[in-house]
Length: 566
Image 1 (tube, rainbow, N blue to C red):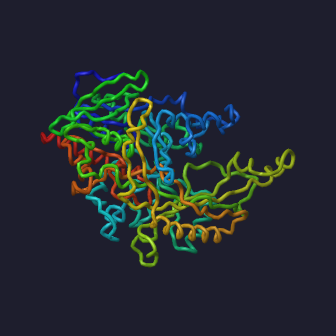
Image 2: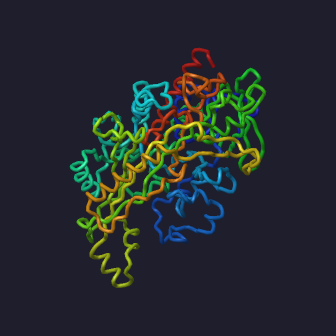
C-alpha cells in the first residue's frame, strides 16, 4: 500500500513503535486524519512469533546459524534477544550500516517493523520523578527538563491505565507509584534476596514493574508465564503497539498505516514549514511523497535525528531543528555492570518452581536520591539494581558437567538454583557525545548513514566503582556457591538499547531542539516525540516516559489544531 500522491492528511507520523502508536491514538481519537509511515513490514504471529517453540523444533536448537548471523546480523546478534527464535525482529546490518571511531565502539540495536521494538522489549515500565526532570537544580550539572513530574503525571496515569502495567505500590519518592495491575510474585530466590538485602542494606527489593498483564485487561488475557516475551506474544498479554495502540487508532476510521515506507527526509517549504515527507518503498525502491499539515517524527531517537539531519534545504541548511548546532548532541545510553551471580545452595532441588516469570526483582535508586545517608560525592546521579533467582528447565541442566546416567541422576536429584544481579547507571548528557551524517556511506536505499561518536566519561567510571562494590557486598550476603564477581568493564555504549537525547527538549532555542510540547523550535509544524527529546535519562528504562510524552504531545497537537495554530 502507498499513500495517494495528492491527498494531504492532518498529521503524518513517522514510526509505529511505542511513541508513534501513542501519538496516532491520541490524534485519531480527536478526529484528526493520521497517516503513519513505518520503514519495515508487518509481523504475522503465526509466522513470526516463537514463544511456544521448543529447542528441538529448531534446526540449530535455538542457537541459530552462527555463520548466517555473523554475516547478516553481526551487530544485532550481540543483543541477547536476537537468536534463532527472534532474529526476524532485528534489522539486517548489511542493509543498515553506521559508522563510529575505532576507539569508541557503539552498538545500534534496531527493529524495523510495524511495532518497532515493542515486540521484543524488556517491558520495564518506570516513572521518572523530579530526581530526573529537575536533576540540574539538584546537583548543578546540565539543564533541567522544561516540564516537571506533576505536569507529566496525568499522562503516566493515562498510559498505564490503557496498556496495563503490573507492579507494587511502594511509596518511594524517587520511584513514583502508578496505576498498577497486581504485581507478579517474586521467585523463591527473589524472596530470599529481599529478606537478606533489606535486612542488611535497608534497600527496598520489589517485583519489577512491567507492561505484562497479571489479570485480563481491556479485552486482552493475562500473561500465561511462558517466560519468552522477547519472541512475541500470541495473546498480546504484554504491551506492543500493533496489539494495543494501533488498533485503537484504526478503530476511529481516521488512521492509515503504510508499512515498508522508509522516510529519508522532510519536505520543507522556504517559509520553514514542513509540507510532508519523502519516502522510499522498501521492497520496490520507488520514491514517493506524502503530505500533511503536521509531521511527527517518532522513529526512535537516532533514526529520528538522522531524518532531521538529512532534511536540508535553503531554510534549514544544517537540517531541521539544527540552527543552533544542538541537533545530534547529548546522546545518552545507560551502562551496566554485569556478570555477577552464583548458586543458592539452600534452594537446590529436584522440584521445579511451578511457573517461569517474565520479570525479576528491582532495587530502586538510593544513592544520591535525596537521603544524606546514601550520598556518594565521588560522582553525580545514581544507579539501580535488578536481578532474579531461578531454575531453568534447559539452561541449568545443560550447564552440568556430567554425561549419561550421571547427568540424569543429578537432574533428578538436584536442579541448581541460580541467582544473578546487575546494576544500571545513569549516563550524563555531554555535548561531545554526538551523531552526525556520514555522507561517504549510505544504506541500502541510498540514504546517508549516521556516524556515532560517543563514550562514557569519568563520572560513569566513578559510578561503576560504587556499583561493583555494592554488587560484591550483595553476593557476600547471599552466601552463594560458585559465585562470579561483576565484570570490571562497562557495557558498550548502545548495548542497553536505551539511546536518548540528540534532539533534546528545552525553553531556550540556543540549547535545545524542541520546546516543552515537543515542537521543533525552527519549524512551526514539526514535532519529535521519542527518546530523542530527553534532557536527562536517569537510571531507569525510558519507554514509559516516552509513551507519556507522546500522549501529551498528541493531545497538544490536537488542541493546537482546534485553535487554528497548525
